[in-house]
Image (cartoon, rainbow, N blue to C red; front, side):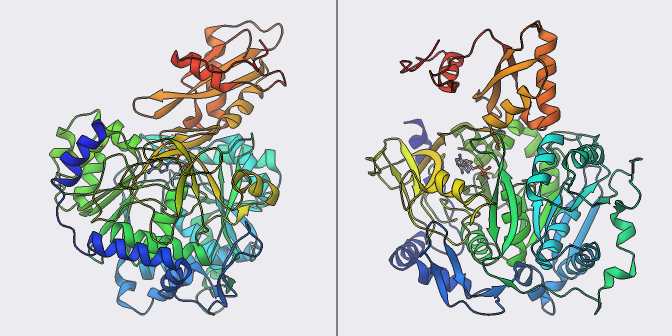
Length: 633
Ligand code: PRX
């Protein structure tokens, strides 16, 4: 098989020796953790600071409503910022930020802490209290992590909405979380153009009706509407005396380990995206442990997770875990190809990036421009590369390894989800690699690939990927919907967490992720629900019914293809199809824009009226349609 050949050729033969743990020692750690996972996680937790120790590591008496570090008091900000103060780390750079226009801003741990305290005091002065939700809708600028940390510090729950989402997506999330404060910006830069975030925010706020205040970061300095008494500029607020707080700083709220830290909406099987809930205690243990294990972060490293903080990857591995570990992160605002396709490599060279963590779709899109854009830069400081979000195909793996990594840097392919909060299946730097495989479950994590009855499938066969024991950074539920949480993740195989992915395990026990088995489409690594796109389409006056499917795409992994039935009396035209694609982009966001909108006379449905997307997909790909006995027409 091509992938196995590659693994011998690239993954093993030329694998350079890694510092730190040998693979044999790491395997022993995995075995020890398997024998006593709670002991393993407890030992990890002991490396963090807590206001009060736990009485029990895990309470599984109400499963699947698991509780970790029961009785402990903590706050993730105490570990991410407070504990670095007064140590050498306070003078270390926490963040090196480059704007798309070349602007540079840096924050030491001391400076970041100060800014976070000030903004926390601003939020308090707006009446934000422990447990309140605050929505953050910002471009990729330092104020994004600052706002997140400020919320966490005072015990408020942040809900970050990705800056590439649009009106309806933001409206739904504001309303569902009942946020009273929205932190946004006058605009953001992307490919040299201004994204009118404030305009989108105004429209979403008008639809939602829960928001009392908007804090607006000046990024583009363009003229925007500011509602008197409701909207305030961030920098105007940050010079007010109130930012100094009562004692010149801002007390970190003492939280229960199980108190919510954030909501993060993600696409699932129904029209409304659901909010995944993560908490302070177990989450901090999970993300810090896994970042340290998989990327072996050291003080001399420059860590660059090129994701957006608006996704779980950014929450866990741009904001929280690197700060807990006292690392120096690089963050870049804009497009990888602006103004030229070497922007990323220029940044990596300029700041001496040692570890780059990104998604296969980004690698594929940059690969198209050829090697010269990469090789003209000195990337000799790179020592590890990471991948996340979808399976990495052999061509992209080879290019990433050879051209970007110069054949020196192991590729750490991390499998995980918004729900898992942390890496679950991934190598460590000394692991023997097989390109396209995320290798083995991490210590304290148990995964299996099973058939319909829950029996492990033989090596090489496809099955459903399940996680068979709880882990500390696991989601604690879906916001205000315990039943759906139980139903969606824990009902298919009682006691096991259903990932929604299919996978296979090879003879060496290595996991190979194949893809989603549900109605989730991964477009450029972004997770979109078919239902979300369909509900945007039917909100257009011309449309009566719609179906969305994902079809393979060379760069994006998958692209969206839609089929629509028009309302009686509406005439089909190419212009209308185009307008419908625009409509989806406007309602959900540019990332959700369908590649093709096809106007059809009928849709394949079951007798009970459910659209059979499987049949549409088979037709689109020219494959056999399978069992169509339940098909109505
Ligand atoms: O299908 C898997 C895919 O991304 C899904 C989770 O998406 P999301 O919640 O948006 O989180 C993405 C970032 C953690 C998974 O169910 N996926 C994620 N990582 C990998 C992957 N597929 C293959 N290999 C990976 N390394």
